[in-house]
Length: 168
Image (tube, rainbow, N blue to C red; front, side, top):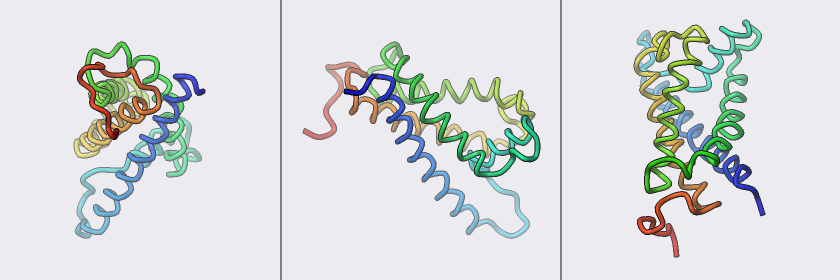
């Protein structure tokens, strides 16, 4: 039997994979539909993390694979574990809304602390509005998947009278 934290890490890993696939597909679509010479509407989360790593650690750490590695480590180990701890205390009824609340909260913390420390300004202003809006959307997707998967693995996340099973 896995612990609550381990189940949170598994849910975080699944949510990170889902968001990564969404991010890659959206960026491929953007690459194919973008007119030559125009600016990108948004940048991938991994490229933003690579930029942050370059700003903090130097040019050697600015490779896209560093961004992907950080993305998977933080999403799986840090955020998954943290969600497992705070989920019962979140003031919503369903696993999905608990995940959304958690994910929007982590997005706000990142925008107010990590982004300025990485040299991208408050709310990542240097990355542009499209990128920050895209990060909010993908964080919400992350939260929905995180909450639902954690609930399926662990249960007892949402309000018992309002949650209907996904499958009988």
